[in-house]
Length: 393
Image 1 (cartoon, rainbow, N blue to C red):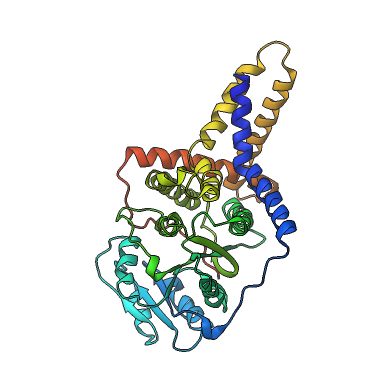
Image 2 (image 1 turned 120 degrees about the horizontal axis):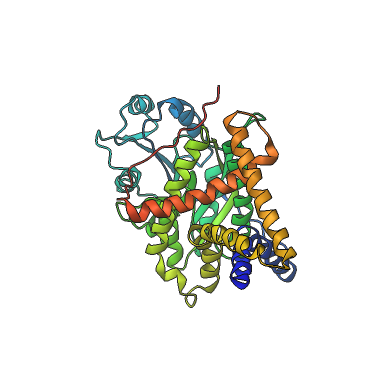
């Protein structure tokens, strides 16, 4: 039991902290051996033609601001097309978009889900590159330039932008926890990219070469992740570009964030089952190492190992002469009490930031267990299940 407990805790630590520490030191060594990273050229005349695709479902609240943000984006004249698709929207979203002749609007009254909308939009994309972004996110002015400059490198098949979560000083656990999580994720993606490749892109802002785009299955939940990883599977790199960023508000509350996380977890196990080739390290050993370390462990065994290690620690702590194991159990109990206290404070709308991290950590891992259970016990649908986002007033 003691060996299993130690191995469980080692895997948990590696998943959430150890991999990041290892990456950091590998990158430090790589920089010392190879010297400073070369600056990426930014020749506007050499930028590829590009289509910005926005798939929106009932986003009337955000749409005018999204369009104004989109029209202010910098890109060489004549090289950018704007394509918005609003299949199934029953609010005023299509009518708002139709007021702007600069934007090509695709709309059908039937709702078949985001990936069906994206596949339909791709039939109209003829440019060299395509950039996807969500309707409720806002891009910095040079985002498209910063992304598309990477396609001068023929080894690059996709580019992931940075996701930033907006929250204020009165943020609750869902907002502050999500913001902290994405800051850490951004650091990991930066190091992943510098080592070899990002392990999947987020739908808030990512891009692919049009010639490498492959339609994914109609029931795909994490379409952004799968689209980008199918390109990585071909041997192309996914580059991380932190100077291109999409800002969005946090989930309305922990309940909405949990709904989103469970859906992501269900999509994560679906993606793992469909990307089995990446477990073979021989074609692309670094990519397989990154994929297993950064994604697979989080989305499969680690949440269960947290439960197992706690149960085993309780059993071992009641054996005689095991004071060290009792101290470990006390540390685990203390951490989970902090998470519970964070939950109680959240219910009473009392903001204690020190409690946000343990509470959000537990919510994330519960979501993985719930998502895996949901995937194997219910019929998975790719039709959007929108988590409500905070509205800035």
